Length: 236
Image (tube, rainbow, N blue to C red; front, side, top):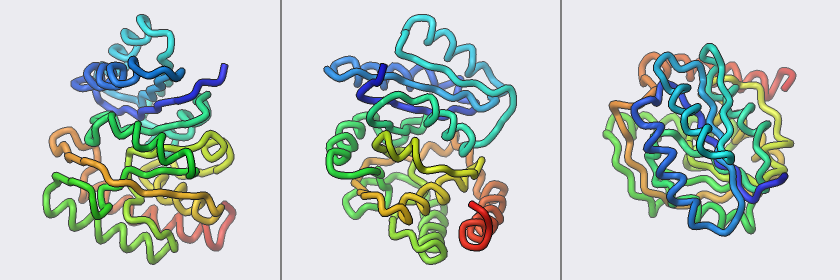
C-alpha cells in the first residue's frame, strides 16, 4: 500500500547513534496524521548496526531494513532505498541527524510546489556549525561542481533532501559512492525538475564523520572527473 511519506536513512557503522536516531524520527512522526514508513540501509557495517536495526524492526511494522554483507557505497545504498520506498514523498536523512528531523515539515511544505527540495547548508539564512577547513573545502568543491556540471545549486552534497515519488523512480543513476550526489543533481537539473533549496540548521559531527577529507576527497575528485566524462561523452 502506498504511504504518504517514506523516510530513508543510509547507515554505515552507526551502532552508537542509530537507536537514538530512530527514536528522534519516531517521536517526530508519531504525532503526524499521515501514513509513513522508515527505511534503513545497512551498508556492510562492521559494528553491530544491523543487530540494532533488526531489534527496532521487531517492534515496529512500518520499519524496513535493507542490508549488505559488504560496503557497497552511498550511491548503491540510495538506489536500493529509492527502489524499496512506497511513499508519495521520499525524504533522505543522514543517520547522524546533523540537521534536526524537524526539517521534514519544511521539506514537505515546499514539495507541494516542487519536485526536489534540498536542506541547504549554504543558503543565506542557514545556521551552520562546522570547522573552517571543512567549510572552505566544501564551498570550493561546490563551486567547482557548479561550473563543471552547470548545476546552479549551492549545496550539491546535502544529506537531507526531499523528492516527489516520480523523481526517485524515474531518474536513473549509476554512481555507487559519494559522487552519487553529483550525478543525481545533474540529472534532475537536466530533466528540468523543479528544485528548491531551503535554509537549515546544520551541526557537523566531526567524530562520527565517515568522510575523510584527504582519502575520500581524492577519490571523490577522481570520480568527479570520471562522472563528467561519462555524462557528457559516454553512455549514461
